[in-house]
Image (tube, rainbow, N blue to C red; front, side):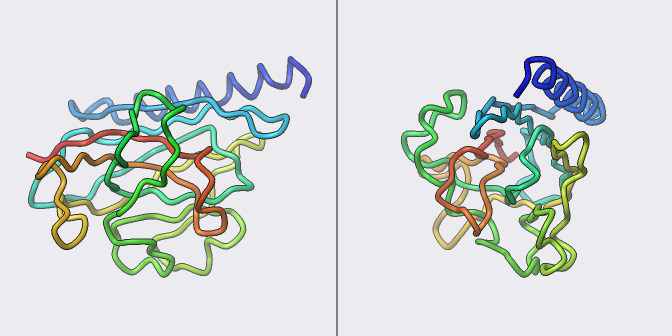
Length: 188
């Protein structure tokens, strides 16, 4: 990729991330996490903004992201942070974030996750959508419903369970850790 094209792509991703962050600035508990990945000759500056403090009774939240590879689908969900993962150090992202609230909800029935895939999103109803394509780079703004009860016996904030709102590669490439981004959350 030519340096000018890379700079332009980086600038677009940065502006989109800044705009998304400003859009959530009204929430005192909003947080942004990001990372840079290079896949082949393309560099993606991934950014996710989501609330970092959530109601223990559960709530609907909007998660925004930018800088994604439009050729790779992702899930947006509340997941347990795997043992050994430091959410600030992408070199530790070697295990898939799991379990996730609602599981791998390909049918879009729980509202606890959202599938973003520009090719197959139409298969999964209301909890799926395509990326917004800006110059070949994907962004999104999606709702999910979260609560601390991830699975039977697995509750965020109890028994050492730490959780985050995450993006991760979808079921077409579930072992790919390139698109993992974590926004750690707490429930009050």
